[in-house]
Length: 109
Image (cartoon, rainbow, N blue to C red; front, top):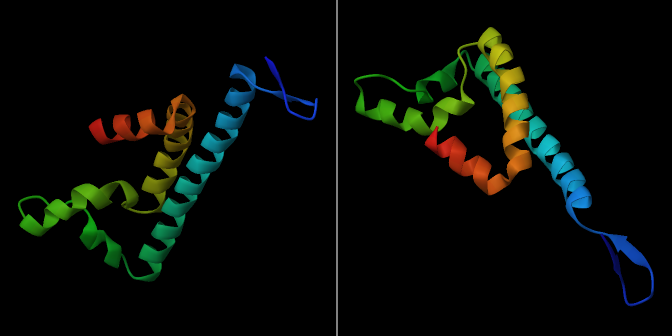
């Protein structure tokens, strides 16, 4: 669908235009998130795994805070590498469906 502007020029609108823009934003967002995970693992390595204390720790009350932070922490570079490709693929697909849906689905899963 093409919309006319006040000056007589036209702009693209509709599903094709929206999908292209959404795809670009989804790709940028999930790449930035996975890059953040790699930066955090680098910081954790430099700090001699000090960030791991913020992960889930069973049978400890303070370990409950790990529920919020665990998605950002990994058990090492191999663990992060193994999770990066699925996070990129599934995160991209989820974000293309819409950011609000992605956040709700992520929170529920």
